[in-house]
Image (cartoon, rainbow, N blue to C red; front, side, top):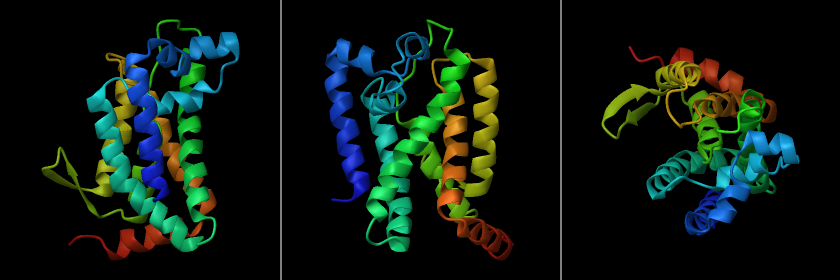
Length: 206
């Protein structure tokens, strides 16, 4: 079984159990106010294993399946022996890094909490964009858009929505999940910058 499928199974099991076990949900969710009060920083990790409902879980796991397999394959190709472990560590590192800025923004706000793997999954999507800037992504399964344009629009929207703060979605975590994914992968694989420049210039659609 691939590391991506292992993460999907683990996340799905924890989420499904927490749907009906409110104590588990409340003790594991990303809750900056409690994290500051109780030093329960483990929530930066466990919050990414929870989801608000079945649809939230399905969307995140579907996107993880699509893009996670690609990133995992790239890493294991470069590191045949330890690639799967490197990928797993990278995934959860992105998750934590996505939640830390949210912690500092909302640590004094008792009414804010969030759950979901979106931050980590977004990081994987942006790694894919880094390696395939002109690949077409299908927004809402129907609208084709170059990956790099999607990335720019996604970062803009996440920043705008986080500033407006009009819904219960952690757009701040999405934004920093994307940034964390890019930075972490560039540190792990510096050649990604060369690949990006080469594909950006040579694969430009005319």
